[in-house]
Image (tube, rainbow over all chains, first blue to last red; front, side, top):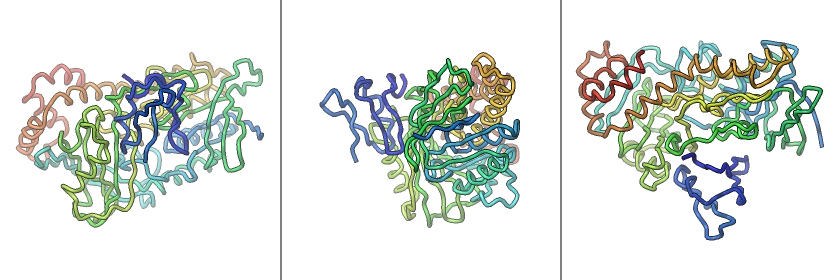
Length: 52
Length: 397
């Protein structure tokens, strides 16, 4: 399976941009982050959130 | 809104983008070639281990007395999981680059050929207007120091790296399987002891599951120390935590003077690398050696093809995907098919445990150092594990 099957993530200069409308909340993006910056939050419209 | 035009728009000012620009200009000095780099400087911030083979890099820049070399490397040392040391190659192995100087050197060459480089400028969207009669079929929305604007281009080369958007915008499937993405972290570490003429590659499930740890010397006592893991095997710990454990175990006294994190694609070339008037190259098209994770020289080799094909297609007034398919075919016979073989070897090696590598290391150390080639190391692996034979047959045939 691809890292982000629906292609909801865009890497911008400012950081990661997750398109909440496209994200399916499959969580496949969480483990590969080298610093563990991604996590799931309760709001399904914001399936993935950035932490420190 | 500013709107400007160019013949070839190169997205990304890394090694691939800069070589593509140089080659396109060299093939046709009349072309208007523009390179856009998102970061404020080319070559910085550092994004990788900076290792290159000497033969490969020499095809693009002359290493003699070059300022972009941090360290010349003459030895390759493998560490088995239990720490058994195996010296495989001695001689003219390669270089550890100083990418803050390497990319500027490539940029200067591209500039001499007539390419224009603009840093601090990000492409944030790309669309194609197929009905555009003038031939300026691609429209890039860009954001730079002077605000937002548009660049219309007759041809686009996507050299935008592992985070590539260009291919995606053009409808190419550039997604990476999770198992083929190495999650990497690296520190520049000062004040540690190691052989500054050697690169060290350290394997093991307790060191870097699914990948390896590396020590790439920047100088005496200073090295890029990093590792890559396959996240699915990482027991829920991110790569940076694995690296902290590694440094605590092996280089506890060093001072960490900088760090970088990122992904390295250890897959094979994307199935489709051409669209109308657009080709991706380098990391953006997964043109990386999947055994080593090395992508600098391979990316430049792909970019050389990309630049030449862009110029030839424009000269022939035919930038159709069907004509550009020649680029894909040339790349596949140059290196793409090798990468597919390496990928099968990677898959086979993934099946073995630490014990296998420990035994292999001890067997290889029984071969005289001057006869210790990678081929013989591989042959030893075969003797121990005949199940590798089908893979090896494909590798050598």
